[in-house]
Structures are given as structure tokens and as C-alpha cells.
Length: 349
Image (cartoon, rainbow, N blue to C red; front, side):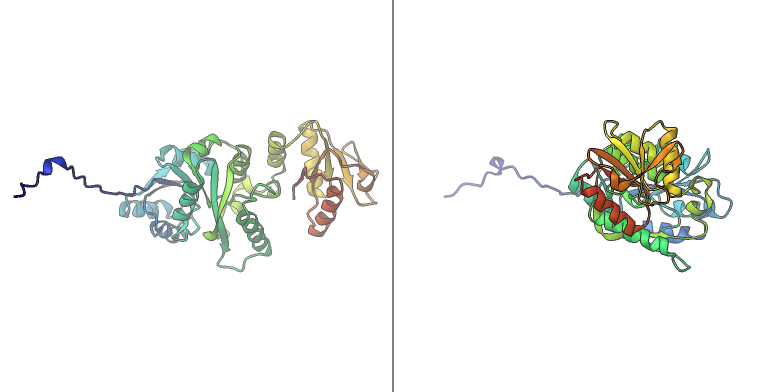
């Protein structure tokens, strides 16, 4: 006869598998954005990734911004409203970041829209890649008015670089990490100095610091940010963005990151931008020689530097700053440089 089954010899364990999502902190400076805030915050609340916190920092708005933010914070506990005790977007970003608790950091502009997949896609890129990466996605400009050709070309150029993970290859032209469409691990963000820099434009400066600290770009092939152009956007209204060439910023970071004092530095091009670059190089005591392919300018003395004929100069073992904006001229310049198997060149416009 079989005995009673003795369960004491067996141990049963019940496992409950819980997928723990990691907290994403969204930092959003807000100034007089009442016209667009509902649409913006609705797009954040609608994300298919739910473990986020939003720090909306009111930067002394004088419209209905604060009331709208408070209404949303009452409806959704993930939204915290803070007031900027100082002034400006940099101080607002610092205020929001200092309160944040997330393992991932991103930022948002108060007049833009997040596609519902944005947070999920950016975070998954970082999870897959690991530390040492900055995740981004493709962007699309939109406006109540027809978009200017400059915005259309910038969007195409930016998305082309991003989709090929080549964001740093032309970083001296313009900002190649879209300011409201990136995400980083918090420790990587802090390694880059976070929002602690007081340099404007703050987004371009941060992109250079990502580059300097070797944060590898990884980009989704999907549109993850809808970027609004309007008359009230900061790039149109804030005095800190008036100089859209940002030559001082570019030269500073070039000297910190890429400049090789053991190589001859050439500046190619004497347009308005070229002259601004020349002034900044002189101001920072950076020796250079000046090239051009215009017979009318060859031999002229500008700021104490003689303009040289590009066809008579050897570009071996040198660095070249290209200060020529025309695309067909750039292609011809590149042909001349590559004849010397030189890849140490930088487009500044």
C-alpha cells in the first residue's frame, strides 16, 4: 500500500515577475507659453511610458502660464511646478534639475509636442546601449504659418546627421543635438557638467560638452519631437540668442576639444563669418594662416594677416577651419583638402 505523500521534501516557490521601469525626469523651463501649454503637457501625459516626473519651472511669466501649470499639477501628481528664483532659461533648467530624482534626464520646450512613443524610444536606446551614450530622435518643425526655407533645410540636415549617428561630425556648423529631443543617464549627464554652465546658447554649449566627454550619439529612426516655430520662441525673443553665428562659443570649444597646437592652423574664407572667426582666433592668441581662392583678396592684409592663395599652399599635417557657407564652394574646398589626404578639417558655417 502506498504511503501518504510527504510534501515536506518539496519546496514550492511562487515567483512574481514585476517589470520595474526606471524614472525619467523631464525638465521644462516655461516663460509666457500659455497659448501652447495645454497641447504640450497633454502630449507628455499621453506618453506610453508612464514612469516619468515633470518639473515645469515658471520663469516669471506674465500671462496665464502659472495658472495652467498649477491646474495640471493638481490633476497629475507626476507634475511639479517650481518658480525660478533667478532669471533666464539656464537658471530655470538648474532649478528643475536640482529637484529631479530620475535615473534618466531629458528636457522639453513648453511650446512643443511629444509623440506618444518619445520617452519609451529614447529610454530603450539608452538601456540597449548602456552608459556613455546620448539618445536622440528625428525632429519635425511645424508652425501656424508657412515654415521658412532655413528651418526646412536645418531639419533635413539635422535628421540626416542624427539618423547616421554622425551628430558630432559637423558640430561647428550649428547645434547638432536637438535641445528638446535628447535623453541621458543621470551620471553621464553630470559627467558632462549638466546644466551648470552659464554659457548661452545653453543647448549648443551642452552639445559641445557631450562631444568633449565622448558621449556617443544613438538615434531613433522615428520622429520623436514636434518642434514648433512661433514668434514667441526664445530663439526669436531672448537677447542671448541674437547672434546666431555663436563664433565665440565655437572657437572656445574648438580650442578645448580639437585644436592641435603642433599643427599649422589655416582659416579658409574671408566672408563676414570668416572675419568674425579671425577676430576670435586673434583674441584668444591662436596663430593661423589665412587662405582664400578669390584673386581679388589674395595678398591683402586683414587684421595683420596676409591672405594666401590656396593653390600655392601645402595642406599636409595641418588643421583647416572652413568659413565658406556656399555648398558648391565647400565641395571644391574639400577636394583641395583631400588631395593631401587631410581629414583634419572643420566646417564653421
